[in-house]
Image (cartoon, rainbow, N blue to C red; front, side, top):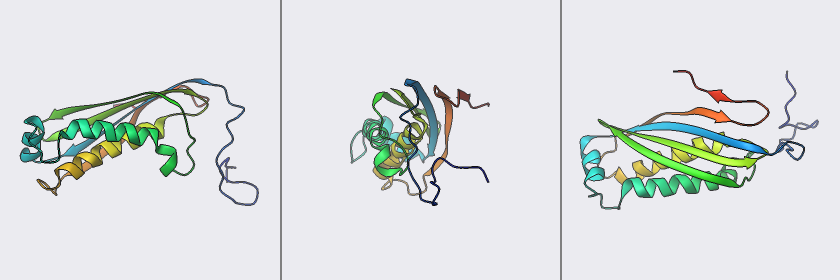
Length: 157
């Protein structure tokens, strides 16, 4: 079994020590989709949702999620984010959320990008559940990451 940096010699879980790592530019992009019905799309496009502007609130929720990832995902580090950008695209009955996170630091931002995407989509669900309880969140995944010791990653189509 491969030795883990997350488990000490006594079997205790620990946060990895990154103090010796170099500071580099880190970037990650994640994407996810929520499938909804036409009434949800109409309420969003016409800004008729009784809870407010669904996509604006979801952007803010995603940004907050990225900023607070280390509070909820136990072994992630607190990091200083330089940028969090969340965009939505509506295609038919799918709302596609793309999140880009940038930092200069000693650890990557993949989890922050994935978490922000998921929370943005959950916020859409929360704000629209009175219209459609059959919504499906799907295909949340990392598209790319740059920086760090493990190198770059780009999802192949």
